[in-house]
Image (tube, rainbow, N blue to C red; front, side):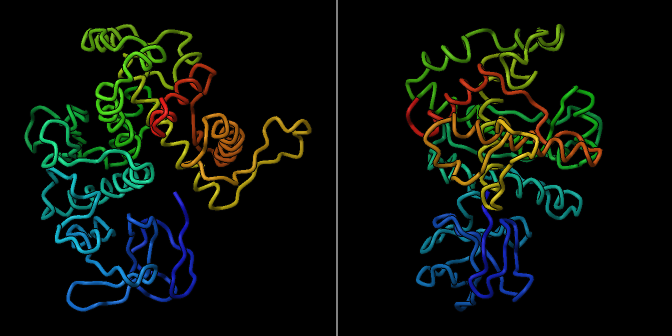
Length: 352
């Protein structure tokens, strides 16, 4: 994720900003140009982006619910932006609690789409591809006792449990499942990894190459899931997997690695936007030193990404511990995991 600058007053802006705190201009994200722009009214419901004055447009319909700050493509009569057009079921926005939770969901989902659009990954809606189009259903648990909503993926349909937007409930689930990390953006990145396994691996002619790295996905998934919850993880799992859940089945290993690749790249881009470097005075051999001065979305290989990530996250984990917080990134990246991340990198860049 990048930092942005107001075209009217030069103030620093963030991805989710709706208005400039300095000059008061209304703001919007323009996915076609990858920038947050200050706006001027252009008559009716149209706005002129100061970043590209020749491309007036309208806000996504979900801006009415403060759930989106994107403009629809210029010249389009579509009601929704490039991210919200993939929404299927949303919660009842007349329920204030559900609306607030859904807004948090949309903030996370829009960050996901920022990355997917940066890489120009295939993004067809369910209407465009009834079999494999990407659609998100955000569902609230029923008010009465009954089956709770399960977050998951099924042939392009991603279901996210609305309750995951409740920080206390998400922390309760994280603790109950023994997870070191559980966030909304993590759910979105993981589940969309399953979708892109379908599109880029299964349907993209990469099955053999993927199996050589992640293992045989033809293994019975339900049996593997039951075994995981009954027997737990292998004692040496950190030597080969990015997370404990990745040990469940090759599909989950791929989705977890995909999610971590997105975590790493997007976090490094923000570090680069701030001009961060890590150079500990005690590191005379420069073993944990790095300067984040490149665009990780355009990196030509996984080696540069990992060599910058490890010193950077070592420093941030140390800062978090100084505040009494959990590590920002509580995971180990062993050499086999680097190989898996490299497969994801090459797949995203079309070279796997």
